[in-house]
Image 1: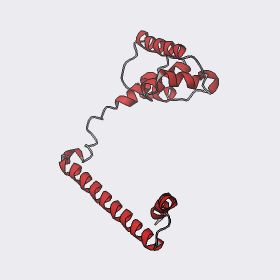
Image 2: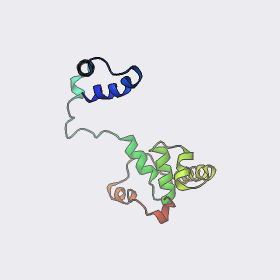
Image 3: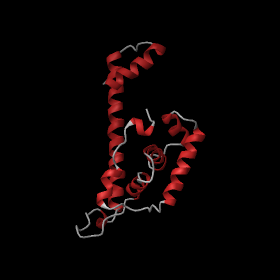
Image 4: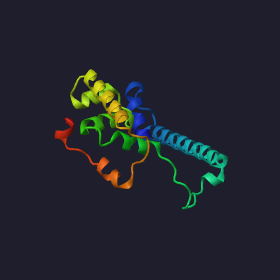
Length: 158
């Protein structure tokens, strides 16, 4: 009914109030309801088709002793937070590589020119290469310290 009222607010000022406003509202509400039921039904059919096409063994949790699934994004996050990098470089590189932000967006967040941020990200990548950083999960004792969020004074971010 709310959608019918919204439709009335949009339609009636231009075309005028119909002769039977309650009938008009009821008809529009019924049509919106039918459209919603049809859309939900079609979505459920599509979901069922995808489910039916998915092999059953992929829907079952792997055994507990199975080899763990590799998470590339998590490995990338830990790589971006390597201790060889300054806090501001870690943050900039993480926003670029993991967050998918552009260099200009990151520069705007840090309140620095885009060229400066591009150089900072490039130097961070080179520092990782020089440090021999690898694209893999660090040992358990190193994980916690890498994920600490530095304070504003360290990053320059506001």
